[in-house]
Length: 214
Image 1: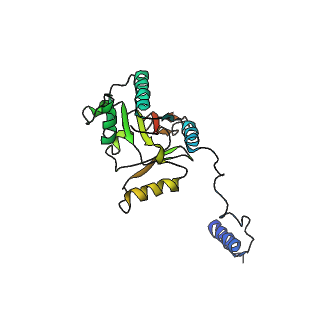
Image 2: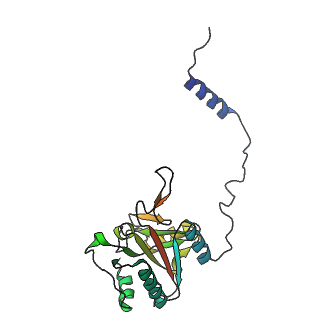
């Protein structure tokens, strides 16, 4: 009498048979192999290339004066009027050069620009690591159409593991409850496979790497 086996049972039978068969590992040195090619570029160049590749904007500044000059050019280009900054350190920098900004959330629904700090810049993929430990929280990096991130050269690292090392050294056991990586402006291709920037957040991302805040 022919055994009546369902397609599911037949598939499981084949899987069991395959698991019992001993085969040589086709990739014996896979775990020892490097995931990425060895980087030979300067981190600033690598980060700028990767950020640009995902539609972000990279701006290197030697000092605070250079930063303010670039900010004035952007404000003029995009006709910014509602610029918000809640980080005390950045507020002090902007105030020192008499650059206008909003330091409260008054009329926040009209915000055009949010200026925030970050935890680290990851050169390998052009990403920015942020957390909820900064005064800007989450709103300032998500709601305005333009997001400006300010970082020091010492925050630029090669890989994600290096960024987590910065977090561990900075916060110890009090790791922030929200850690996120931003890789270019928000995007989606859910509708008819058409890429749309700014679908769930800022349409433009600017990363300022400042060598000297003074």
